[in-house]
Amino acid sequence: MARERPFCPPGGLAHVSRRTIDPALGLDLTPSRTLASRTGSVAIVIPAHNEQETIAAVVGECLAALRFLQVEGEVVVAASGCDDDTARYAAKAGATVVTAPLGKGNAITAGLRATTADIVALIDGDLRYYGNTPLAAALVAPILDDLADATVADLYWRPVYPQLWLHGFFAPLAGRLFPEILPKVGNTPWSGQRAALRELWPDRLPEGFTADLAILLHWNDLRARVRPVLADDWTNPQRPKPDLMRREFALLTTHAVRRGRLAVRQVPGLRRWFDEVHDFMSRYRPGEDDPQEFEQDLLRHALSRLDDPAR
Image (cartoon, rainbow, N blue to C red):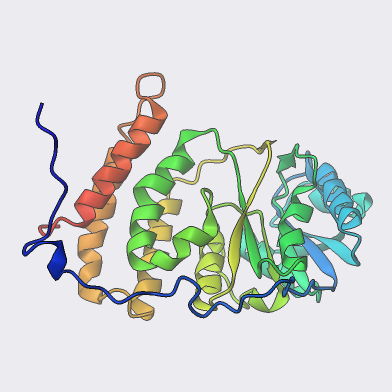
């Protein structure tokens, strides 16, 4: 069998010359730690809609996170359009309770307005976390250590759908429009579990579930140091959000147009791409398709269709 010959550019290697780049360019080498740990108060905001079954436990875990961090702080529950006992159970468990109109974005906004803490974390009202360190503490600790300005939980995720969202929609499209965002947000950028310095939180958010993506785009605009935080085992109930991906597509493309990353004339072609990729996602059959193989096929398909000049 013939041995493969190494690639050689036209004219041979002798004609290739590149300037040397110093690997320590711009790096101020120092023998000691240069980051200064932060101090300040911490608020954990819990957006909750009819979460009376879990809210007391979630509040308790968030209070435990404040004790773990040994910081001054508070837990705020934003009861969003609730018609059950979420607010009463939350108050009894030790949280400050505010009310908000229905919608996750509305709940986050109300919770943010109810606190003046220096660092704010978000934890969903139906999340049960089983890690040794309380999740809110794991999210806030890198900010207190000045390792990050904002964090997003990188969750181990079992259901296939969010992974299809990542491989078929977010990674290809956000990677094309905002490539700098991908290394910052981990494998579950959709996660509602996150934390940030007070000044990084937006004053206005979309009313519903697109708020999570809007926050990421806002942090990216501010060039914040966003880091994913590896998370342990957890569970929460799955509620269908059939129109969410379409609304997130509209949010991403609108934001890209405003930031000069995309021309308005390109949006219809991307909309056709979205419809085609969405159709590809719908072909997944549990028990028949291998999840990881399907995810990789989906990613290849989404990227190839993005590059199709006929799109």
